[in-house]
Image (cartoon, rainbow, N blue to C red; front, top):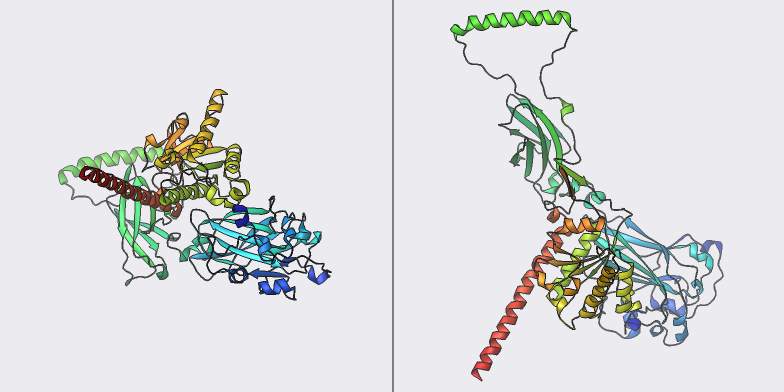
Length: 587
């Protein structure tokens, strides 16, 4: 059934085409033509975008399928069964899949275009392409179908051409997506016919500039002045279009931290604001940060030295004037004698200088900051397994965990929900076994439904008991051979219990999420979190900033929603059991 569902539509038998130099263009973009033009082989239909309405009309369909604009139908359906044999020809996957962002007037979203090159293997039988876009950590699939007209036959030279999709608009900024480009037709005996690529959309600051983004804006002008025992700090305000009305500041020295809420009066000054710090310790070096009072706002870091200036003195007592004056004269004489024997020393008036105000990338107070690169090459491959018996809320929590780990934990995550084509091609058991062997780590997200006999797991229709049994057998084999067991891990969310971890996984490392995300990161990357006198702080994963990133907020919300859903399910179960008992009593 899956094979019949995912084999994509194409067009009539290819003919021959005589190529001219003008036709051998480097880049080919879609044409505005329909399925009828493709079937007739008319002019201007060389490379057409086929809409879902066209195919639905050709197939006599009235409702949309589960993949939205994707059109997974057997290829001979659109041929009118004129030549079913064409579906068995071999066409290899496209190459050089590339993502290009194009101008988008909407500030909160991105628009991208996919480009690729066809493989020279089987290019004579190539009838078109299908591009599938899927968000990582969310639901929904967007597809575009492109077909060649019936009389077009490509030669090996076309493998150097670049084919492009139409724009995919409305992609949320700072989000992860997977794009898959398939070569058509897909034969009944499947080969490697598609190429996938994972990418991230731009951040708000990358697309619009930080002056137009609440979370990315920060003051770029800070001036510190000391007036007696008071420090005055002046900074530039956010642009009016960001609608930022309040700010905050932290200043720390000698283990003490001062928090200041700042509410500027824009009726007086719309560009800058000055606030004061009092009761500071003289002779101390202060490290401060200032930011807009918005979620996940970027903080501007700076420091200054506080010195005591011109303290007022009380009226002198005349009985002390003479002794003090005599002592001063003696000290002055000694100093004068010393100065005659030493080089001249220039005395400087204490003041706060501009070079004392520095921009810091990170505040390091007995901590070692680890910043992960998005293009980090050594990303361990992690297979995440789970059960769907606990409902869609639990599945959503697992998906949000996978998206968080993919984005912030420098991990290449393998999840069945992101590879439905591979599942359909190989079958759930073969796909699952291959992923276990090829992955560097295997994480089993345990829940009550995982231990239910006969329940379905995440991997297609694979039985939960079978999945746990396979992983348990791998763990037992590794243990008997004296191998390292760190490849296999078990985890539970806050709404699950330790007893939800199957006995087959009793030897593996266990984690409770999201509290143990740092420990999980440590195992994946073999990083020591604590060394003598310091500890490791990992951006977006540490306790203080986990929930500040959009992916962390989504994971936290998904866990909370699942906890509420499970409480409601348990209440329904208890109510039904009580209803059954009352019924038996009445009987």
